[in-house]
Length: 332
Ligand code: SF4
Ligand code: SF4
Image 1 (cartoon, rainbow, N blue to C red):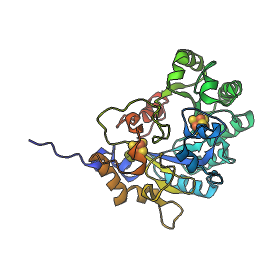
Image 2: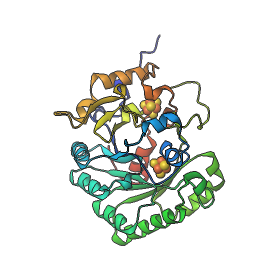
Image 3: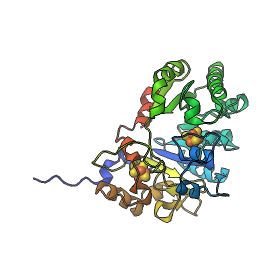
Image 4: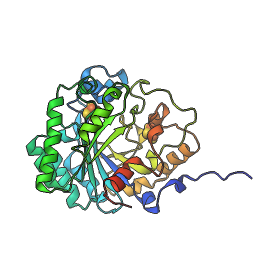
């Protein structure tokens, strides 16, 4: 007896997930960050050791922030889906968006169940920390890629002490105000970090609600094979079922790795009249991309050399697990 082929539609966790993405990732800026991480194409760009294709993606004049209007359009729609959450991300540092706290406040006012953001904590000074807590951010994940000796070789920003003090002060302020914001500290689990990983966990466990280690991933193969060898068998990538990424100009993208926003990876734009994330998420074109992955055809330009599917867990998405179970933030 032959096994029937898996249908792409059957891989959605629930009917709600098929109607609307559980995670909408908003790219708050393109190419703006104050760190020089070796594990990130933006960090390499800042440090002058990015490869040529990354340099071309961030050619002079292309660095920009998402406008408030585009963000509001996205937040308004996410707020109508109780199972969905908003992930404030960037091709760079989200807190460097000049209206960051206002964006968070807007999203919460629009009814978004959960708003999460990343930061390297360099600009998380007291005034900004107060504004973020007041705005009602649900989760702040601070990227501290390294500890006393390994931070600087890994993040190369000269601000270890400042970032560390800012995170500790944020925790103190949160507790003083009895604010509900959860604090996560994370690091990329890369070779140079191993000598201090245990000390990092011991130190940050005192201040963070959770300390997590992220797989060393390739950002769509932008790090020139630094992440080790691939398993022989490839599988469909859960990103196409679990996360919808919006570019800084409102483009709905195939993947968070669709940085070049080429025609093959842009499925629509939320600012077009009548366009919705839900409508685009359910298009035949999006469905075809998922079916191709199920069939073992990884023809999207971003997928071709990508190894990030290795860490994209199925139905046990680790970040979902972190939010719902470990941080107790519920969801469907
Ligand atoms: S802080 Fe984040 S965005 Fe900035 S260089 Fe490091 S990993 Fe990249
Ligand atoms: S394989 Fe890579 S580029 Fe393709 S959807 Fe997954 S993470 Fe994105």
